[in-house]
Structures are given as C-alpha cells and as structure tokens.
Length: 203
Image 1: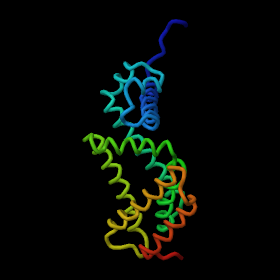
Image 2: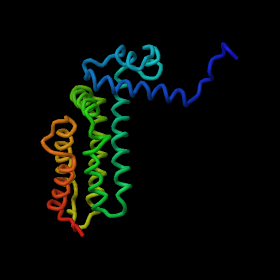
Image 3: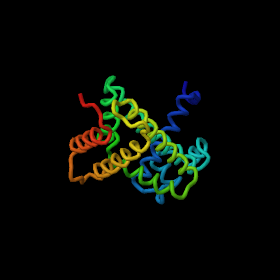
Image 4: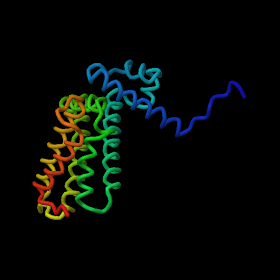
C-alpha cells in the first residue's frame, strides 16, 4: 500500500550507522581531520545532519567509531591471512607480517585515514585511548605468534616492538605509492629479518 512507512528494523539502523562510519572514513581520507565536519560527512553520506546526531553523540563519537571500525577491518584482514597460512607457527607469523604489504591494508586511502587518526590521537584523549588499544592488541597478537615459533625468545615483547617498527616503515612506503621497492621485496625482507632476529627453524 502506498503512503505507508517502511518498518524500522535493526538491520536498517545498522546499515545507516555503518554508512555514516564509511562516509566519515572517506572524509578523513580526503579532507584530513581539520576538514572533516558534520556537514562534510553528511554530504558524503547523502543524509541530513539530524541523522548523524540520531546515531552518534556528535562528530567526536562518530570519528571514534570510525577509528574502531577501521582497526577491526585491519585486524580481520590479518586474522584471515594467519588462518589461511595453515598450522606452521612460522608460516602464521610470516602471514601476519606480510599481509600488511598487500590489499586491503596497503592502500593510499587507508593511509590517509590513518594519518588523520594519528593527528587526532595526539590532541584528543578518546582517540588517543583507541589508538593505544588498537596498537596494543596488534602487538599482543604478534607476541603470541612469535612465542609459538621454534627458537623464539623467552620474552617476545621487544621482538614484537621491533617487528612493528619494520612493518610500519615498509607499509608507509608502499602505501604512499612511490616506494623504491616492490611488495614482494618487502615480504622477502621481513622474512629474512624474522629468520635472523628470531633464529627460527626454516625447515
């Protein structure tokens, strides 16, 4: 019958909320933190500002939700890579590392979004806390994968710190799009680093 409103469903609410999060991520990538506003996000999402305020307690809450969603997306890509690597501890650790050098993690738009989050993490306590949570969870998973490998150090914490620095540097160069090396070379470099630093059994 015409004139009747569509019934409200949890699915439609989640879809609208997710659409706002996606629009916020695109705005952060295109405009940076300073250029991302309620108007810009709502224009990107093609919705009214009232809808944003309906689902989020202001733009700060939406940016925080977007950071969490982005962190989850990256974590899920890494988890998928590890699960696809099979039972070998070394292969699982290597898959976790090298997945950072491939899509969807190596992506100019994702880099631009991360840069916006990083800039906010320095001045916004809530965003800073989310940043710490995301990186702590990443390092903890890396420590777990390192500890499972033959020849791994008794305390894998510093190995995870060093490996994180290596990953971030190579990922940044690749995501910028003008790296003086290919993704395959980054993967080979990371593999040699693992075997040298962790003294893993390569057989």
